[in-house]
Length: 192
Image 1 (cartoon, helix red, strand yellow):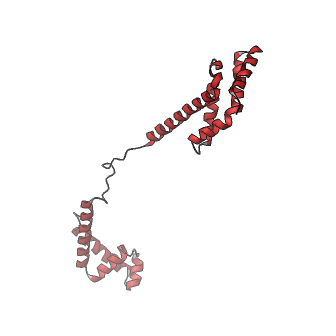
Image 2 (tube, rainbow, N blue to C red):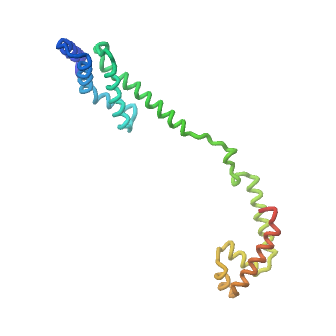
């Protein structure tokens, strides 16, 4: 680490050479950059772990802000501390903007808008009653019609597969399914 007084001596020597203040400021900031960029970058990464890109941007912005100063003579005595203060403030701004950005993406969950029928105890009770009624109506069907309906709706067999399995015609399967659906529709009209 360089002694701040060395920077101060450089400042006085360059000032005595009568270069423009803008040129002097650029050279002074360049010296500060060369001396402190490594430790400043590590400091920023320590506060923002895993954010190498943001740390690089903050490091650059720190020196840009330093260049915008009219008179760098006032920071001459403790330039390193001044750089770290600028960087710390920029990190705080970055964290603040992250929080605001993520907060604006947050949508509050309103249970009334997304009320689920499935988790409602009353719906579960109604569902159970509907299933019981379906079973009762199925039991009332003739055995062949009942078997054809179960194979079609619960075993997901096609009409031709049912016809082959039961050794009946496809047309017979269709008639039994029609009879079963009409009976179920009439009995379950208010429930389903």
